[in-house]
Amino acid sequence: MKKGRITPSWIDSLKENEIFVFGSNLAGMHGGGAARIARLHFGAVMGKGVGLQGQSYAIPTMQGGVETIRPYVEEFIIFAHQHPELHFLVTPIGCGIAGFEAEDIAPLFESAKEMKNISLPESFWEVIE
Image 1: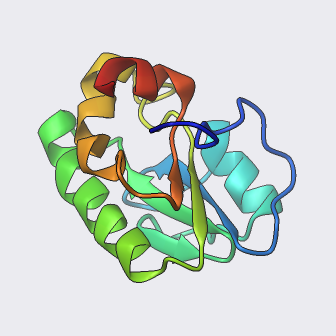
Image 2 (image 1 turned 30 degrees about the vertical axis):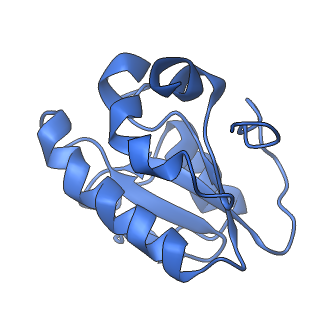
């Protein structure tokens, strides 16, 4: 199921159809972690905390508990389903500055397991498989 769909642990370039999916904050202050990489390299926009921006996609993770992240992950999965021509490389969102563990966040991506255009971090696969 996950064969060929593991997000690389370090991403510094993207193919034309690839999207860097990162954890953000609702204010869109992309100052650290994967958000900073998204801003510096993949088109993330300061002040925009949610959704597609250049070759990146922001999922807010800093606004509260896991249940506050769920609707944004669901929105992302719907977006990915609507854009099969794109391949989404999900970073370990929420597992850096936001302070969550893979065990907290990975279950939110359960419905992405079957989607060929979504790659997940190894740590998320370990939880949901």
